[in-house]
Amino acid sequence: MPVTYVSGTAPGGLPLVGHAWPLMRRPLDFLRSLPAHGDLVEIRLGSVPAYVPCHPELVHQVLFDDRTFDKGGPFFTRLRDIVGNGLGSCAHRDHRRQRRLVQPAFHRARLDGYAGVMAEEAARLSASWRAGETVDVFPAMFGLTLRTVTRTLFSARLAEDDVARLQHSFAVALSGLFRRMFVPGPVQRLPLPANRRYARALADLHTTVDRLVTAYRRSGQDHGDLLSTLVAARDEDGNEGLTATEIHDQVMTMVFGGSETMAASLTWSLYALARHPETARELHEELDSVLGDRPVTPADVPRLPCTGQIVTESLRRYSPAWLFTRVTTVPVDMAGRRLPPGSTMVVSPPVVHHSPAVHACPAEFRPARWPAEPGRPPREGAVIFGVGARKCIGDVYAMTEAVLALATFCHRWRMELAPGADVRPPALSTVQYPRRLLLRLTDRPR
Image (cartoon, rainbow, N blue to C red; front, side):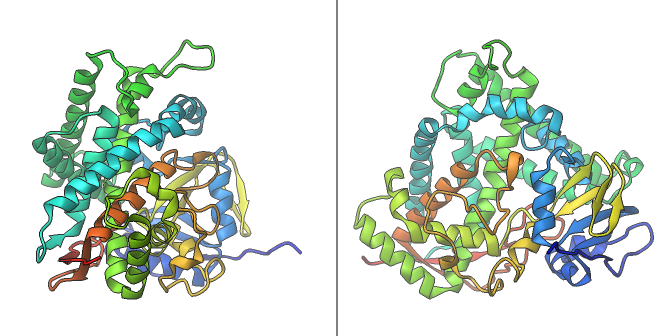
């Protein structure tokens, strides 16, 4: 018997600004409240109506049909300021060609090489810590993931001033991105301090990446890294490759996707372990059994199922990517509504991840709910990396890095919450992460 879906409207919208206030101040609470109003709920982004699919089947309909529900809307309009027309933000018309050209960069043979960099960078960070030290986790993880993604891109360590510059520029640009979703175009062009900061951050990001790519391409060699694969990529006839602009946009996309979002994922995983000592104990037992006293290596990833389950459950319970938009390209009938072309769809992974129709006791942290497949993204019950044709091309890369880093830190250290921590996500944040997670380190005897 076919399911009948119900549409509704979110209460509390205000003239001109719509639901901007709850989306900016308490976004996850607001979004998780929407299923009470229907399977498809209308909200307002400023004065623009938008539709949030709250039933898991409707979410999958939007994500699988990328021709009808194309990438676009206020989120991707602003995101393109940062990453251009790269694989993660391009429209349907460009996606197949770009994905075919970028795919070789993520073949298994390449991933094995990247994993060595991941393990090395995680070990280097862990060795820099001292017993009794209190670590501000998110900045430490952001530095780690930024160094890792740039080394897998460029086969060289980024200078510390470049790391600091990129971290600052990404933070300013990403906070500005979300804010500008609700600001009218004419206001965005005024010479206001916030607009000037945003413009400076964008210019610095693009200038830094252009400088790195230009210096790299002068060598003309295959370094066995991501950028070598992008430069060498050719179409099926062996002729057309990626243009210089397209290579720039792919690099920006990979640096963005491989830094802040990855840092948030690791930060939430460490927070979950500090909150759930019984889970930490199971993890320590697995690490001691598999590793003994030796360091973690990429070959260990398939032998660390508990570690992989913790990463996946952290991604479900504390989704770093919490909102993105799509735009309808044709008229669509959904939940009793007729949506015209150009309608904005708002997809929120936490709505699915916290649905009792998908997960039993969704508010609880239960790593064992996931299959024991370390280093592999989940196939069912989550939209962590998207689904369908637009699924994240770097999903295995991300899971491998997270498992290696978590195993490295927890094999060496026991971590406890320290006074002064504030795990509320920052307001106006494109990626959800604890604004100040402080963990105290102690040696872990084995």
